[in-house]
Structure formats: C-alpha cells, structure tokens
Image (cartoon, rainbow, N blue to C red):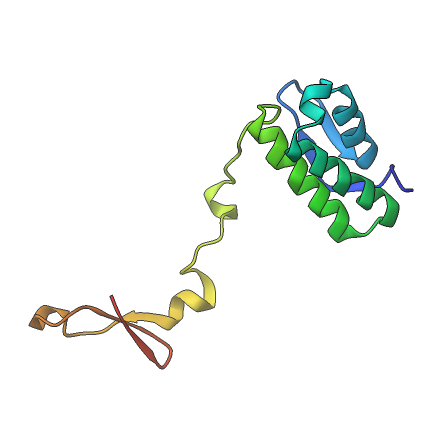
Length: 123
C-alpha cells in the first residue's frame, strides 16, 4: 500500500492543518469520533481511501480526495472555496464563445434566436 502517495492538491482544514498525503487523510478519519466515522459519507471516504492506497492510481486518489472534501464540507472541517474569476471556466469563453451569435431580427417582433455553428436555437 502506498499511504505516502501525494494528493493532487493539498487540502487545507479550518484548523490550519494541511493534508498532503493519503496517510494524512487516514489520520484525520481515525481521529474523528466513531459516530462520525460510521456515517455513510465518511465510510465511503474510507473505502475510497483504502482503494487509493492499494492501487496508487491517480483516479483513485482523486476520487478519495473528492469524497473527503464532500464529507469535510458537510461537517464543517473545511470552508467552501470559490476559485478566483480568472480560474473559473466560462461557458461562453474561448472558441465555444465565439461560435455563439444573436440573430438579427429580434427587433421585428419575432422570437429571439441564438445560433451555434450551423444550428439555430430559439431562446
């Protein structure tokens, strides 16, 4: 088992600690009250953590981190974060955003129309 496997991104807890490895996550879970550990969200986090340690696969480590974050957010161990605007994806940014255009003619009383490439989509 590879408990020393690094997480894709460190997880900062509200108390100032940072989780950087699978072992750090395991220690956190083991320190939770038993009644908390036995809840479905934490049981699932533990199952994914063990799988990640057994395989060391990136996808398994990422799944364990995601479930830990869901459980930790719900129970208040981490604060919700919103990435800066520059890091948030926009549905209309980049190449996809340039493909959208509003059709002329909405001023003539017809329903507004949005075109995407060759497709016309009523709004």
